[in-house]
Image 1 (cartoon, helix red, strand yellow):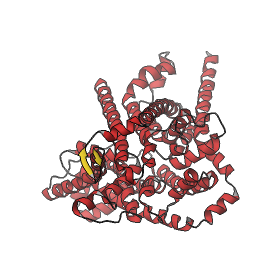
Image 2 (cartoon, one colour):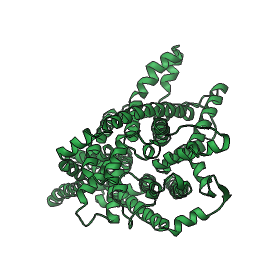
Image 3 (cartoon, rainbow, N blue to C red):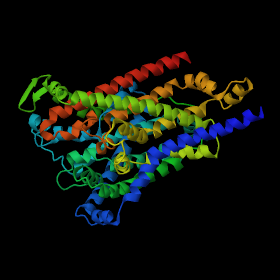
Image 4 (spheres, rainbow, N blue to C red):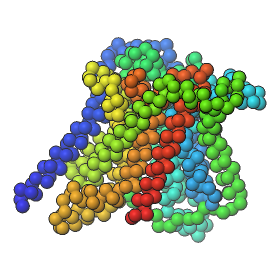
Length: 531
């Protein structure tokens, strides 16, 4: 019996060490290798470059403006859905997340199609609007980042305890004092976390500025793209990557320090949404406007994908889809499906095991394992991609489908891991003790107890990994070749004169992602009914 007791901690330590080594190799090691390979000459070339100063300034000011707009709009949307009694909230939530299912570069291209020199609005109503430069970057960034910020704030408002507001009303506190003394303190940390996350998300994105920045509105992300992709100067690209790591790491630290420790986590009282006519009218109007804002680029792509040649010939045709599939489109779509499916499967398995080891088998090593699992949240996809190039270029992995799965898993593992980690934290903490008393080992407990209870969370993890792998461009653009290229990279290969083909690719990605989302919701519904 003594031998058995000693063996279990040793085997747990060995498993934790193995998982930690895997995470270290796929997430941390490439970043360290990138740092090591940066030379003083690379730093001088970047800092003394003719566009560095203006690019840094553009990145900071455009991102700041876009972040402020996103946080305000996301907060107002969250208020409408959480505090006002309006109908159709489920449909509204579906519409608002649709922009998350297409690549950011599609948003930039959508703006060009709408507002460009030969855009739809100019041809239909003669409206001229200069979309190039800062205006386009800010507008496209807002379209890209708004759904994420909305989800963060809506979730916070949904679980706020409303009993304190009733007490404030009984005490005669006015709306202003109630907001300043109750709402603002409660929302301070979530708003700061949403702002920093949005800032990091926008400043590291190159999809939108690549499409609408014009000839002289460079950003740090577009300079990194040019250095690494166009010029194949990975040392310079790595320097830009280090610069982009700074806001991402700050956002990561703020989010880590700002998380609640569990106090007051139980909602004591919820409140029905406001039924005041004026509140409902304003909420409906604002939500309708935001829904149109979210649907606009998707509607444009759907229209363009079915016309022969905009604006010359607007007759409907399926030739655009045929062109994509007759070329390499079918192969690239299969590549994307394979990459997304394998990434989702590997990511769910790794995330589930890691979360169990860190949440249910606590030890000093568990804390380090937890930090390793969430560390990729602080690494932008572009930076991770270029670090993989510099680390694995001389290995047999380079140029294979395996390295694309590796980089996607490393890029997206943190959020699914946290989903499972939080789910394990909510389960009864005495389950293992009961199992040990009954002579049931941890593996059987994992398969017979924890796994069935986690089906809904596992489905959500799979959805997150699959959808993001289907539409990502940032990391894989540095690693893909003609054999393993995912279909999302076809968007950047078509210029403004091939808008119909860009539309087809975007619609294909959207259709696949919507199908996966629907399937996952069905799995979650079945799992919920069985509980």
